[in-house]
Length: 303
Image (cartoon, rainbow, N blue to C red; front, side, top):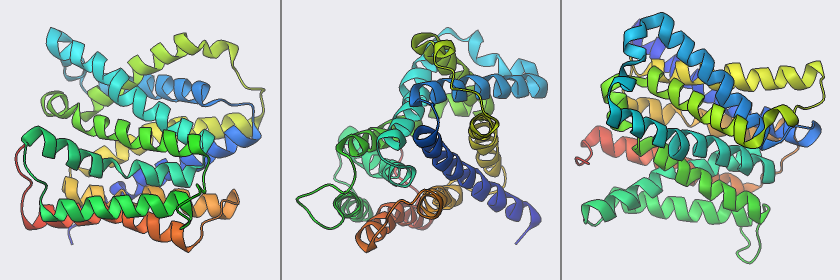
């Protein structure tokens, strides 16, 4: 294995690990501090957006502002900022707030199943066998995860399940919407500007200056970790890994996000996970492996 591939794998693991850790820290903030999901999402996107846009300016100013020279792409970037970036951030943290970090992160991994359904409808083709297997795994896994194996009851709050499903939907939009923008302008400008736009809009709408949590070094240290390491560095590491490894390999290594979130939630936050939930989580996350295996054997149909 070459040094560059090792570096790519390390980056692809570190990014999702930081996402998982930040989700668990966010749950602790919602539970033990006067921090709301609205405030944390606003601050997270605003500061990370400023830092990423600043990083892009230092790296290549001309490249970083190129998207604004094309009216159609600029409008689409603003659209993606709300429907893709801001929606994925907001629904994820609301799912954590109403449920827990582990369940929210695992339900987010339903997005490949939703993408399969969308592409089948759009292309007017029956899903491939491997897609049907993935859909069955996702469905059974979700049932086990949210019912604890008892089909007549929910093992998580209904609002937690509802926002978890919205997280999967918004993650699908986040994946599908910016593909052409990413090809034309690169990941750092698109992610940075969309975070900044979403952060400014959320900050004004929710008046974050009126929701500042009571100061403590522990609270603001945790917020700082979520913003700096769980957002900016996590995105930079994961996107940077794509320079050395394939997107398929990176997507498989993304499973470290639910693994880390689940482990930390169980160990430090007392979240209970029985065998049905564990098996359900394995099935849901396993859809990524099934899809990646199919992609390596045969490229996906053009979309």
